[in-house]
Image (cartoon, rainbow, N blue to C red; front, side, top):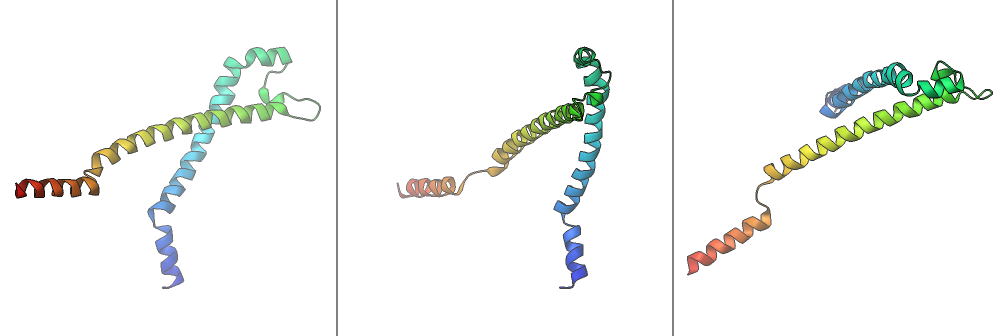
Length: 124
């Protein structure tokens, strides 16, 4: 098999394309979360703490040369992203389990037991 053909098969498999789409959507989602934290959470919820520290922007919180405000903003963003992903994965898992139960049908053991039952009925 030629290298070009192998590469083409690899690139056009569903997993690679799905991964590419996921990365692009993830980047956009990260931008939305950054805006959410910077433009909504920080002004509304963290404003009292920032005023007490004498800072108008969380990114300007410093202790000497340590910019812990940036770190706090990154932690908040991470927690929000982790929570949303947890909820999405939980919903998808719940939906997938229902589909598996519906699509599964009788197991091989159930089929064998039904055959034994039918054979016993015929012998009587």
